[in-house]
Structure formats: C-alpha cells, structure tokens
Image 1 (cartoon, one colour):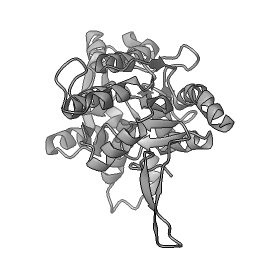
Image 2 (cartoon, helix red, strand yellow):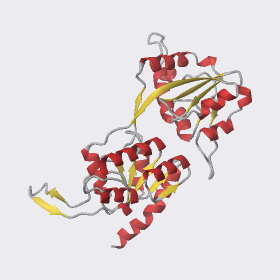
Image 3 (cartoon, rainbow, N blue to C red):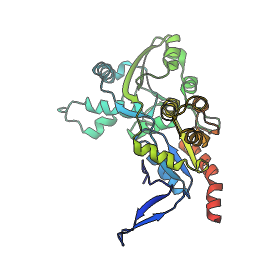
Image 4 (cartoon, rainbow, N blue to C red):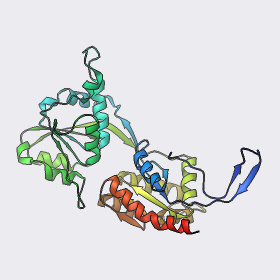
Length: 328
C-alpha cells in the first residue's frame, strides 16, 4: 500500500522485534520512486499499477478537494440540478466535478419519494447530452451509469496526438447549434474561463456552478521528511505532475521552505532544493510542463494524457534504474 510518509531510506535505526535490541543499519533506496502529487484519495489506482511494475511511490498531495459548502454556491448548484431538463448540454470540466455534482444530486432526492436510492443516483435525463474534457471524467460518468448508448457523452478523441483540455472539447461541440440555448457548466471554484467565454461569444447562455472547492494543503513535518529522504538520490525519484495549479503551489511551498534557486536561501537548504529540482518530472500537458519549468525543474518529460501514458513513460525511466539494482 502507498504510504504518505514511508520510512526514510537514509541511515536509520531499526528495532529487532524478536530480540528487542536496537540495531543500526545503513540503507539506501533500491527501487525507483514516483512522487505522486494528486489530491488525497486520487492516486491509489496509479500507485497500484506502478507498484506492480516494481516502482515505489510516495504520495505528496498538492491539492485538497472537498465538496462545495458555501451556501450561495450550493444554492446555485441545487437549482441547476433540479432543472436539468431546461438545458441543452451539461459540461463537466473534471472527474471531481462529476463526482461531487452527482453526489449532491443524490442528496437532493426526496427521501419520501419511494424511489430506490441506487436507481435515483444514476437517473439522468436521457435527452440531455453531457460533455467532458477527458476520459477520466467520462469514466466517472460511466461509473454513475451515464454512458453510451443510453446517453450521449461528448469527449475529445484519444490517440497519440490526443489533447484533453477546453480547446479540444470546443472542437467537438456544435457551437452554432448551441446558439440561443442554455448550457450548464459544472466545475470547482475558479478555473479557466475559455469554455464559458467561447460559448457565450457564440450566443449560448451559460450557467456556471461550483460543485467542489480546491485548496492548497500544507505538508506536515513527516511529509517533508519523507520527501527529503527520498530525494537524497534524486536520480532514483521522479515527480508526477498532473495539474498546473498544483505545480504553482509546489513552487510556493519550495520557496517558503528553501528559498529560491537564485535568491536567498534558508541556511543549509540550497543543496536540498537543488536535489528536488534536479529530479525528473513527468507531465501530461503543455501548461503543466510550462508551470514545472517556471518552478525551476530541469528535466521535464511531457507525455500524452492519461494514466496509461504516464505509466509507460515512468516504466521507460525506471527500467535502467531497476537493471542497475539487479546487477549489483
């Protein structure tokens, strides 16, 4: 299982459980390690696949996701979910938008209606198409029972040149047909305005609702210790960066803890910062790669979107490390 604060691979003391004595051991990491920065609870699937390939993982969440709790935002979300049939299209910008909006819809079901709760959870107007930015959101919809052929789900196509972003989704929408119609856009607090602005520029009425919130977590001492211990050998570690917002938060965290690469450092930290930034990082979009570059990372690999492509890229990176370990 993935641990947020695994035992440091640097020299440590271990207790012999059978003899009850304290033994000093010197250990070094033997398996390559992927540092997963997705929000809490959203990295397990990728972590399990990496473990199956002999790649260790360290979870270092850079975003915290929570259901929307602001009364005004909830009121707007509830009103939209109660009037879905008034829309010509519903757009979900992320898996989090799908999960939290549909969960809220279940909560809105009348407890005295007599409807089966599981059935109510997936009852979506069959005449209301759904558009999503990528396959992760499409999978979240499918898990809620919203999938072809019963429903029309619009998603950018996959393939080697796939792009899963607002621009790619807009290419799949019939913008002239949406002129004069209502579109529901479900997202978190804030976010890019490209989708809404483009739809409105084409004469569409867009209602934007927020189903969840994002905030920047503060790693505790154990999380920092685990990260720094791993990055004693940065060539054996790789960052997995899947959100430009998360990368910007990481940059802020690093500057606060270590100082900036070309600026004033906390005493004793320049080497640690250099180790962190010299580790390779893997991203799935140009915007994320640009954010990583701005944060000071030197070795950035941009692969195609999706966990399959991330896994393939990480395996390619890890293979030589694993071979060197096997030869020792």
